[in-house]
Length: 114
Image 1: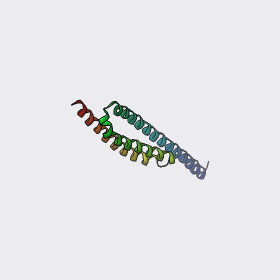
Image 2: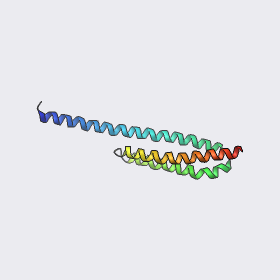
Image 3: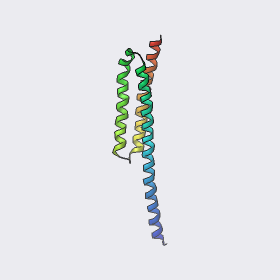
Image 4: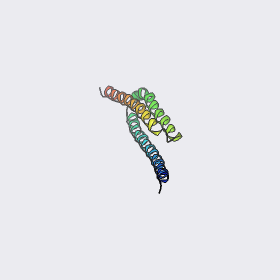
């Protein structure tokens, strides 16, 4: 095998590894999205267990959180090449929305308990 053949073989292996890495990044991003969905679903159950008074305060935050997840999910389905950057954007957006909703749930729970 001469040098040009080795270079061609190595370039092929690099391309294969890049493709596999992109697929793994997509799988990781999908797993993170599904993990957030489970957390959101759990939080949604907690909201429904709360008082009706709390629902009017928390429902808009829950809608915002759900819409953030839906937007991110559709971005993942559009392309695998941007999965890593979208995952970071998703993580930041959902963490912020989840934090706000969680804080509101805890405040409402404290108000109802008092």
